[in-house]
Image (tube, rainbow, N blue to C red; front, side):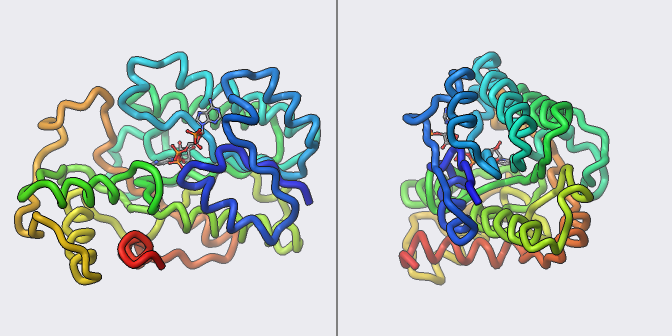
Length: 299
Ligand SMILES: NC(=O)c1ccc[n+]([C@@H]2O[C@H](COP(=O)([O-])OP(=O)(O)OC[C@H]3O[C@@H](n4cnc5c(N)ncnc54)[C@H](OP(=O)(O)O)[C@@H]3O)[C@@H](O)[C@H]2O)c1
């Protein structure tokens, strides 16, 4: 089986390079090989390689910058995704793509299901939604995993930012009016390969499961709760910070005055994924512990 992995150096992409290894021949295509801004190059690359599966871990992910770079975000998150989907259709390949909680406005009480009404609050969220719709319109075989609050031991993310700030500052102010389920890139990569493996072994038929699946860790917290957890767990593992957990203060999102609005409620209901692929997902606390060990103890 030939797998084309786009965005191999991103948070999810890096973990996919490991998790997909046993499933077939992987061609990891980074920005140097194909810039997703060049749609003709992308199309030729897909055709030349002729993959059975395209895994798209690439995206424009700069949420605040997208407010002033609308065209760039749209180009990568919608136009390039449309090219992937239309060519997956021509090759009868399966397209695996990742989407976001930012397609919702966060006003729902309780966790969002896959069929809840979308209403993005930001340009980034709008482009992620349009990317989903482009895939659906192409009628290619596809799995779209919607996830939230992503982190890993690599690149820039909330866990690494808290680490960095906690070493420089004695107090931290962190938002407590947004809730979600922090999810590690490793979980997403492992679930992706497990789903592909189950499809290959005909444990599930792609004809019946085409569509969108929420994929996050279980249970929820606020950014403030997450920050306190990160610091106290990291201290237990031997990390040394200037800040103490009791000096991590709560603030409202409005106090940050960021360019892009975020949903207040980012929690996603993962029942459909668990039922379809017979999965049990771990809690965000368990996943955080694993990434902290990687960051602090290098294991
Ligand atoms: N981060 C989150 O909190 C979050 C939450 C929900 C959903 N998601 C979704 O999950 C997916 C993966 O996110 P992530 O955090 O792993 O992303 P990431 O770490 O920001 O990585 C994005 C990848 O896309 C590549 N890329 C961007 N523009 C490109 C271009 N013009 N040509 C070629 N490659 C390009 C980047 O290449 P370089 O390595 O060269 O920069 C990078 O490898 C995305 O679809 C994202 O929307 C993320």
